[in-house]
Length: 275
Image 1 (cartoon, rainbow, N blue to C red):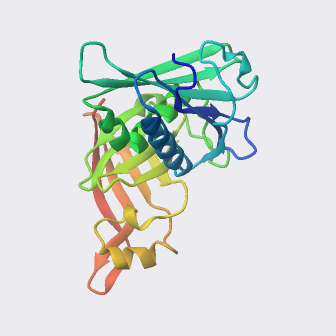
Image 2: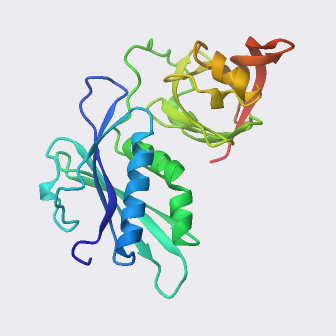
Image 3: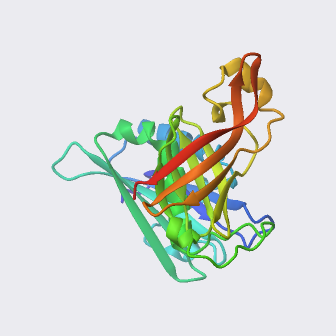
C-alpha cells in the first residue's frame, strides 16, 4: 500500500460491556492505493459521519494514530479492531471494499468484501454497508449476546440460531436482519434503521425496538405528525409465531393512522425468510 494513503478504516472495539448493547469503536481509516488525496478526505469524513450515527456504537476518532495493515500488533490487546481496504478491481471499472475485524486477544481475523459498480457507489451505500457488515462480523465472532435484562427463553424448537438471517415482507420495510445472538436491525425503505432485540418464549417470538423512537419508523403516518408522536411513542414490538412454511406471522404494535392523526394500535404482519 502507498505510504500515507490512509482513507478511512474503522477500528471496532468491543468492550466486555459496561452496557450490554454498547460497542466502542476506535476509528482509524481505510487503506487504498487507488484514491487521490481529495477522495481520501471525502471518504474518511463520510465514514466517520455514518459510524457516529449508528446506534449502540460509541466512536473514537483515531485517524491521527499510525497503523500498518501488515502489522496488527499495534491494535488493542483487548478490544476488537476493524479496518477497511478499498481497491479498484484489476482490468475492470468496478471497485471493492473489504472489511476486516481483528481480535488480538482471541488471535482471530474475520473479513467480508463487497463489490461496487463504481467508487461513488461505495459512498452511496456507506451507512447500510457499515452497519450490516460490522454487526454481521461481530455476530460471526460470537460477540453478540442476548440482553441480560430479558427473561430467559424456554427450550423450544424455535431458537435465534434457527431464526438468524434476512427476512422481508412488510410493505415499508426493506429487510429485517436477525443474528444468532438475539439482536438485529430493521432497515426501512426510507433509509432509516432500527436496532432490535429478539426474545423467544415458548412458541412466541417477540421482536422489540431497541433505542429511541424515530419519526422514520412510522412511514404510514404524515411526517409532521410522526415527528411529534415519536417523542413519546412506546417501543415498536412484534408478537410472532414461526410457521411450518418458514414464515413469521402475528401482530405488530405501533402507531397507526386515525382520522385525527395516529394512535397506538396493532397491524397484521407476516415475514418470510430471504436467506
